[in-house]
Image 1 (cartoon, rainbow, N blue to C red):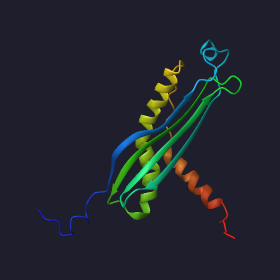
Image 2 (cartoon, helix red, strand yellow):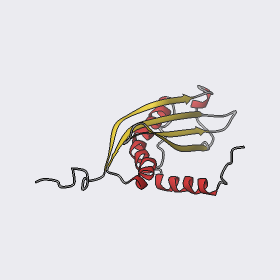
Image 3 (cartoon, rainbow, N blue to C red):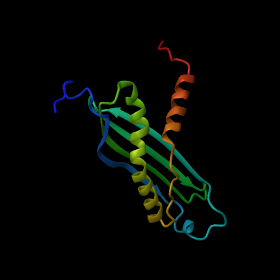
Length: 158
């Protein structure tokens, strides 16, 4: 069988993860060993999520999933973590208008289970029960970010 469209016309879209890696990891347990004893009540847990991406080549993008969190508040902070988990992805035969949503939604969705496990292991290794982050709706996060960008007035350089 031959392809009359030069091999690219009918090729299926593909998203390939070329490599993934822990770019930055910090875990703080500032009040140990006092913080490791029984607690009167469950701590207030705060989690922030962000996604950044940069183009490395025509079809390759580095995507960073940033997770920051803490349990408790000063002066009784139990723990604090920051994780930047990244991957390099190749997009093949994905229409240009779909590139940004794929990079900002599908790529972090692929990275998240690995980042979630790193956070759980780090918290457990810090002497606490593992913290398993709830699944994240990256499509909703993307939509929220796009709406915020559209709501901001254009900035003029003076």
